[in-house]
Amino acid sequence: MRLFSPEEIGEVLEMILFRELDIRAVTLSVNTLPAIRGDAESSARALRALLAPLLERFRPAVDKVASKLGVRIVTARLAVSPMSIMLEPLGRAEDGVELAKELDELAESYGVDLVGGYSAFVHAGESRGDRALLESLPDALNSTRRVAGFVNAASTATGINVDAVYKSAKALKAMRPDAAARFAVMANAPEDVPFMPGAYHGLGMPDAVVNVAVSGPGVIEAVVRSLGNADLRALHDAIKRAAFKITRLGELVGREVAKELGAPFGAVDLSVAPSPKVGDSVAGILEAIGLPRAGSQGSVLALYLFVDAVKKGGAMASSTIGGLSGAFIPVSEDALMAEAAREGALTFDALKAMSAVCNTGIDMAGIPGDAPEEAVAALMADVMAIAVSLNKPLGVRLVPIPGGKPGDVYELGGLYGRVVVMDLGKYLSAPVVKRGGVAPPGVERLKMG
Amino acid sequence: MELVVVSVLGADRVGIVAAVAGALAKHNANIVDIAQTVVRDIFSMVMIVDISKADVDIGALRAELEEVGKRLGVMVAVHHIDVFRYMQRI
Image 1 (cartoon, rainbow over the protein chains, first blue to last red):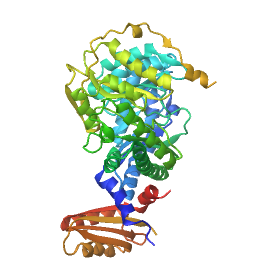
Image 2 (cartoon, chains in turn brown, blue; image 1 turned 30 degrees about the horizontal axis):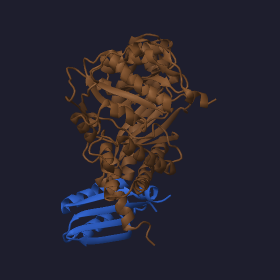
Image 3 (cartoon, chains in turn red, purple; image 1 turned 180 degrees about the vertical axis):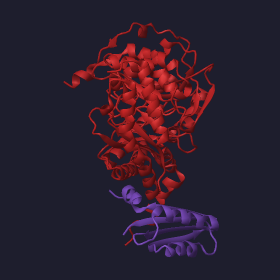
């Protein structure tokens, strides 16, 4: 009897060879808190001593698994413990910049594409290390190429730290476009995200753990298109089956890399990440479900249907689902999403509405370089409010484009794609965020007891 | 057994099966299953191959088979059987 029918083999081959099914990232998450020292130089030395032996084996392990399985692994990434904790004893922004540079050098010399964790958790207020990190953010990201970070400014449990949101908006405005692409403001950041810039080594994690991010919107789009005029339930069922298979591939790769490294396998983030390549687009799925353009009326329904099917298929495929596990709608990183934004079909209002049913929030959207801080902070705070109100992780990753006007396009290249400057509207003052303070948690908090 | 799936797709011509099978035999890789067809002059073949006694690993075998494919003007891909086990079986 045949192990697999030619049809079963053909289906998998079509996904891998023609529908851009690949592994977006294998992220090695490492507890770097043992490298905490009393001065920056010693901390940098300790970081190197801790990470180098692991990184020496990491990229070769990823390449070996990709070669063994015949599956593309697009990036190998590192996540470290929140840098704000390392900065607690140091307390100076310039020390943060030094440590960011050390991580950048380490990443470059060991073939690591990005390092996440240049981050602080300030959802209820700032401590000494947090202040140093917030102050260092523009310098740290502008003076590195591979370091990524976020500010967790809101949580369901404690509410929204609007002061931190405002400071983040201010920091963002001082970043170059390529640095801004490595920075997000987040709410409820999960401990096991393999995607950047949301990845960090969570406090509940073991010494080192391997997390995996999958890609393959082209697979789902092809499935949807093959069904013609099928009704929504039939569509949902077919997406669920495809998502199961995509997530299984992530599970296999994660287990193989973990085995190679001798580190535990953490989680698969089942979010189907798009890329700027043709046929690798989440907007393509939404349009195939039945929209003239991503962002048009009906987008929330289409995204809801897609995300729900992906979660249900993925949940069956892996016992360790983690990270953001929803759907990514990064505007610049998705060719059709970027086109919809350029045409004005996809607006910030549409993205906010879509945030209610996805797990990214507003991602990789361009803003004019001269946008007022308070308008940027207000946009960020809106998404924080949605996250806290609905008890879910969400982020905001904006890219200020110097001299940019709505509709302008800025080429960031690689996975980041083409950033479209989007219109923030004509009312750009926001006294609400200037009031400052921490907005209290909502009823979702009380449901927890 | 360590099984890999060798798949070949492209314009039909004389000698595709022979060239691929020859390369496998040279490295002591054993074909355990084969499905091959030609539809409208497009050649398509899927082989399941045991490489547990082969003298090369899957990476080296892939590189060599891709070279064979290039010479013949067809696409050759090699994947580990676990990919299919994970994606097609619960």
